Figure 1 (spheres, chains in turn cyan, green):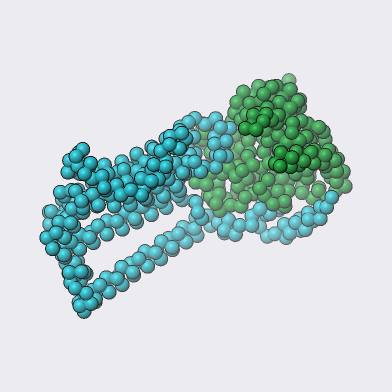
Figure 2 (cartoon, one colour):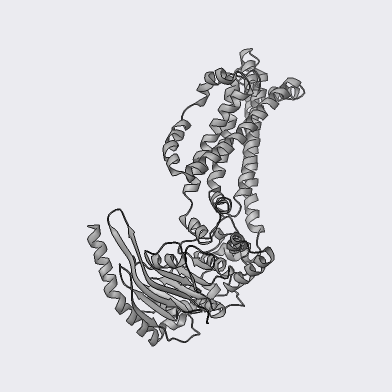
Length: 304
Length: 266
């Protein structure tokens, strides 16, 4: 039998400089190879957070620079006559129009309508999707039966069902909310189910060994364990809710930002249309930023 | 009467797989005295983890009984602490939140929780890492977190199912030596399952050698090495003698297991 490796490891650890006053040096020293952990030892939180905000700062800066560059390009191109004004008016003209819009009552009525529709679709879609995902996990048979349909539903442009919605609930906010909710619920359900099913089995063994209640198992173990997937589902749900809402307004509604864009398009008010488009873009950017912040809070400590 | 450790009487476990009926363990009549440290070594697939799961109440015995601290085991019980082979730290909780987790689940009061968390973290040598997340720790440190979580509950017995199997040999020996020291301080009753003979000798007062399926105890070896030992003991002659004896009993069993697995896979 050969035990030759032992003396060398002993000498290696005794020469280690890691301070561990309350323990024999070999104990704490050998399995602390991770440098990030040692650095962390000295100053717990700031370095990690600093890096995090550094990256965030960089991407914000890069995004702003990109927007400014594109805007400048559009301005120059439009003024120099590289393209027809009807294709894309100069940003300065659009922003001026936008400034006027913001003072108009009609704009705020449309914005409010869209805001409520998007918010309702996000809330209902996430709750519905989350509940469905949970159910698919708890009752694997249901999951096996329904998941394939949801996956293929993903590929279906649900907006196509708008005539059905109109017949069922009429041309109002409800028809928009219902379809956008369904669109948001699907990715949420799939992600939740995947996240819960991918949970390491040892977590449930731990739960069993501690005899946790079903409630504890769900809230203290399963949901946080599926966290990264649920957050990914949330992001998709928000995006789909927005797309669904705007697309539905575009096709069927009598109010809302999407409706207004189509209306302005039909009466050849190019500048007004672009002003509304800018509003929708800003709205989607705000949602993205809010989501990133939510994800950061919910997934703190992971992926570092 | 003295406090009791683990008593196993006429224990056997039979389960049905798709192909056939498997007797995982059979005829186990053994006891782990209170405050003692016993390791079980055996070839892979010998049912040692199954035996541990039965003692933990995570699996039902087909025949026979297990009692822990004088009470028969009928199901999982927080008083029977288990340290799993897989990484069971929860990545969304800091080290101290992980250590407090089991106590939270069983409803230990908050001040008590705080105190025991602090003690357990110091005991396993993780002081200074309370606010770290598992993703910032090495595999060995994560297993210490899992150990601290189990110890903080102050269980009657601690069952460890190859807790260091995923670590490299050196880390494993050092962590093992540390578990041994923790045991020397707390005098927990520990049942430790491993396939590593050196680890078993280094840690335990007694090593049980288990045969290949159907698993049963074929040899019980008392480890008469000094009580105060560290990883350096692996280079002593006595250690080699013990190692050779256990390897002697194990060799034939490993070979038998290997051949059976070969046969069933072809």
